[in-house]
Image (cartoon, rainbow, N blue to C red):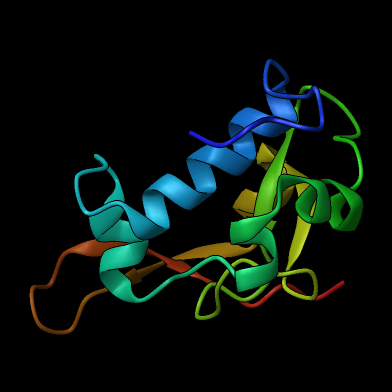
Length: 113
């Protein structure tokens, strides 16, 4: 592991950055199939630099916020991410019936805001 320069390795923001990279780029991650397995990636600038990610996203507004992709067909990058509460994220989803299986699934809606 490289030298940590930012002094933020024990912060929630650093954990979010590390988790985002893991689910998108580590095939052994538990939730990789829902992210990296579907082609969701972290942009090169964020993937290579926690400092750039932290600068672009800024601090979490509260403990209730987590990172959200505005358009879930796209990856993690400055233009496609924001901090959102669970309630805000739920508003960007809808329940639809899968035509192939007949089961009801959660579909992501593009963020409008």
